[in-house]
Image (cartoon, rainbow, N blue to C red; front, side):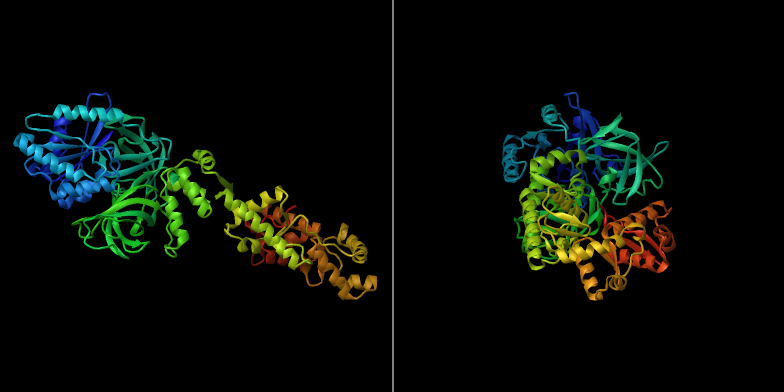
Length: 634
């Protein structure tokens, strides 16, 4: 369990931690000289239950709120300190508001310096404190009178904390590793060391990690968990990590950085949030309101963009935060906003979407997406999001620090369907199938002499508009189910089929042998067939164009048609040449030699592939376009 102190300056936080643990949290010479905590202090002790409890001792001065915030992120329990001689002070109330914004729901109020107050004063202060706690997450927190000087109540407080330690459940360690840095320093003979709290997952010795948002690779060379040497650090523990790697120094890693599993590195500077404005705000928060963002130990400038109109004091609303610089974060992380002069706390809340758009951020569809993002359970969130729009599952898992192994269960509980890396609701998938069938039927009715619709044209016409790869996965699944027919780059319904008249079939039967066999790579042109059969060129051209619509032939160049199976064979040759090439590029002469044709016809064939996007050209060199490599695949 990690306990964080909070309260006004000189109310006895450090002295109380020392009385509980025997450790003086003030480690700087200036702190000891002035008797004031300036930096975060840390202490560890077994309070009697056999487990090690960590204490984060934060400063209470109003100018050091940013330091208090750096230590408050990730704590399990708050120890709110109120001195009996002063009572509730401004910084006490601000610290209490911050704890509430950070979602801290477990805590104890220590009425310190109890030796300076009699029964009546204690009763008066208890009422004052209870009134301040009302409406916050600590409204039911016990209030315990203690004196670090006389020892009164210290043992009772220690027992209460030990009981809370026993009730603390281990955080989920199955997620991916996230570690919030609050200190970075160098130890002689050891190297670079960072300290902080493991927010999720676990890290073991020799694990590869990323320092984010910088993107610096590192390796975990040593671990101390809860002030003890360990082989791994787990979610909920306060740890020191000895990091190694090129460029890994104390100056390269800063307070506020996150140490992450490599898959999680994806910094962001635009985040949509759920924002609670404190009732103490003098006026509503409007567009582009400047603030300082604090989340875990990170601090940066931000602009507030309300998404549902100005946010009134005491109200909760959706907003977008536009940051001065990218940060590492996760969906669900808590944050606090303070004014730019660092004189007051404005509000705070939770991150909902790390990939917020710069445009159309307040549309009904976007607001519906954010409402669904409010769900804390991943499966519930996915179900809600998939009902609004397709969900990129890789981004969904990454931004929530979830492992890929969790996906099948989440999909099952959400009732969502997997389509090429996207999650769609069952209703959305059925609607997409219905729209595809209706669109194809309408096209066939309007174009009875056309074999099918272009695949890309159909993708752009359907809603929701899927990216190319997921759309192809969707079409392949529909084809496997017998609902559509994939014919190269075209689509048609299974029941739709163009047919030649008996006369055209007879003429095509005379033409086909010359499109196949030994001369298949150099077939006669339209004029050659017309001369051979004694027919008008226009009649031959009409028939061959119709055969192209039927998928039997392809017009490679003007009046030069090839059988479809020959086109497929030539596409295989081009793919093979690319595969056999060291860099994937091949020449027109190499292709010409394979099809045993003249240079002019070989170039016409390659130009045809270029137009359709099967090949990409650079000078006299070509390579296969990976996005259209399946064209003319059998």
